[in-house]
Amino acid sequence: MRIALAQINPTVGDIAANVRLILSTAHEAVSDGAELVVFPEMCLLGYPPLDLLDSAYIVEAVEKGLAYLEAHMPPDVGLLVGAPVPNADPNGKRLFNAAVLLEKGVPRRAVHKMLLPTYDVFDEYRHFEPAREQKVLAFRGVRLGVHVCEDMWNNEEVAEYHTYERDPLAELIAQGIDVFINISASPFSHGKHDLRTSVVEGICRNHGVPFVLVNQVGANTELIFDGDSRVHDATGRLVLCAPSFEEALLHWDTESGPVGLHAVPETGSPARPTDRIADIHDALVLGIRDYVGKTGAFDRALIGLSGGIDSAVTAALAVEALGAQNVTGITMPSRWSSTGSVTDSEALAHALGMELHHIAIEPAVSAFESMLAPLFQGTESGVAEENIQARTRGVTLMAMSNKFGHLLLTTGNKSELAMGYATLYGDMSGGLAVLSDVFKVDVYALAEYINQRAGRELIPRSTIEKPPSAELRPDQTDQDSLPPYDVLDEILKRYIEQRQDAEVIARQTGHPRVFVEGLLRAVDRNEYKRRQAAPGLRVSSKAFGAGRRLPIVMKLDRTAIEALTT
Image 1 (cartoon, rainbow, N blue to C red):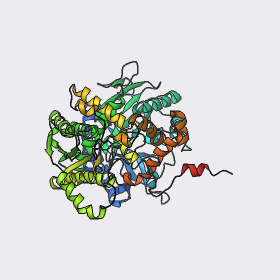
Image 2 (image 1 turned 90 degrees about the vertical axis):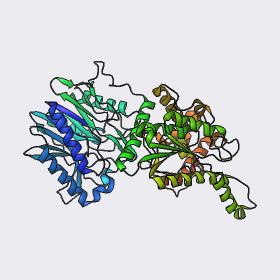
Image 3 (image 1 turned 180 degrees about the horizontal axis):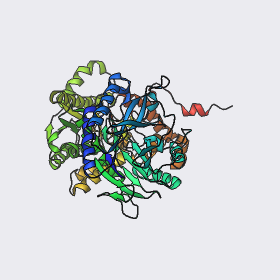
Image 4 (image 1 turned 135 degrees about the vertical axis):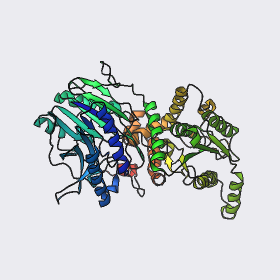
């Protein structure tokens, strides 16, 4: 049987457009000889739908979409489509997360997702009832072990701890199957390609059955989906792999193997070598493009250009995503801005081909200082005065955004957001935080990659080499307030992404524990800023936002806790 892997980019809630996309892809697949076309998890509604699932209208609309597909799908083909379906049992949650098999003139068949993730960005048990049993779908003489996303991840080789008591794949194998088929909406994080490969290889080795995985591609708000759909043979060898971060239609024959351009060499190596920085770049570009395209609320992007590395990388990513004609930069020098902040911004805009405007903020800053002088009299000048500059820039950028319908992209990185080294209602103003899940050391790596990829200097060398600075006071650099970024980022990564505590971090890095604890306290007490930040594009296994939920009102005193001895 010839199976088509339909790696498509659905939009959350846009059921009519998603139906059209499914149908057009199905017709294309059938014209190329497909007998079964497999689509991603929840593709009819889009993933993640969140509390849209609470709406009775949405559930009815999904049913309309399924009926329309049945009426208009090509004859003599099966479509395996991801969708929420009602739970007929009055007990339990109202819906199942299902893979629905559609055939023209044949009653629908469906399998339900058994393992419902409730960690990190996932909260599926909020809406879905877990499957009570695993069912094998027989189709044209082939016994299909169909399952949904998380059902393949209860794997002893990769799980830190076991969340689930049941193993859906073992239950399918016990019934006798010819091929596993997994439909997924599995978000990207750097390293995910290799992790998927390891998991599926292990499943195939353990059970001796080929594995077909079809994953969603595209971005929906914070989450970016890389696709990375693939086929592994019964020995675990990767034989077919879709390109990442773009739609694709692949074909695999259960008898003869891969069909078309994306067959993997006999060595079993990935279709394209994975490069962490290249993947982060491509993910962020896709995230910007889909945020603008799918919301439909903005005609172009707006960026405040400081001459620094973060705004330069953000601008380059936006130009790649939207085209230079759809990106506007504003440089806003103050009394403390270096000459390079303007000239480097000009060089960047010229190299990228984007529009650039100059707005001097000194008159506004002076006006604010005069207004506040009576109240500030007798106090020492400090952060409050410095932040007037940042907030003046925020007001300026938001005025441009409001006036012309531009999406303001914030430029702060994960290191700054972690430490609170950002100004609320200033440089944190905006609608999408492009670099909020990218540590500073990786921002520099992205800059080098962008220039290397272009074969020329898009981001000025002077921008890459200058000491990072907010330029809010004379001769200011980031390292006046923060450790060197290579030191800081290692500690932050261990704390935020690897969830290590202060003692482990200090022991493994060699840094004094009191130094490490001071950084962790800064991360904890700045949760209130992050709660007010723009949604950020997720590219790591643990990003700020929906996947990291901490209380704002808390006091985590590690020293006092450890003093509690019996």
